[in-house]
Image (cartoon, rainbow, N blue to C red; front, side, top):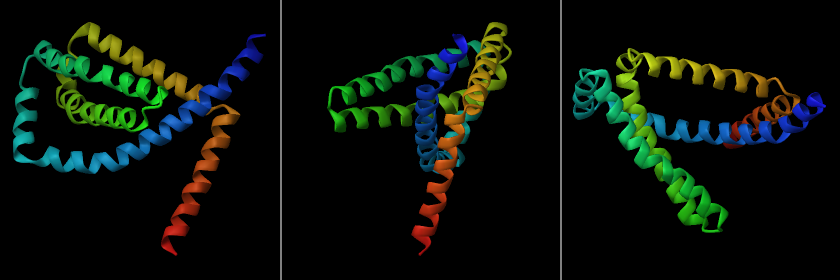
Length: 165
């Protein structure tokens, strides 16, 4: 029974993750070049160096505070989308993701070496990234994922040919 349950559960899970990962990849591809430009700006270089020089627990507070303020807006945006408030929901979700990338990921990026000196943080970080990697490996091994990924590759190739013509 558990084999059948795994196969049945893998279809919607793989479809959801495929759509989410495709959207995330597109979003990051659009946003990361702008972030790279900002990261090289003198103000942000100095700010990154100042954050990296802080003690680990101070960096943790600097990371948790904006994360706690931003993360709920991702879910609020999804709720508004489900309620049919498409423009408001999409704008909120996009703004929350942008703020998370611009603020939280930058703080984590410059502070990660020091954050990983906090024992419980390092154990939790490596446990969660290992869990994520194992879950993604399992989903990516499913037939549904492979079929969806192949479809996306064909679509991407078609779009490239279409826009070159």
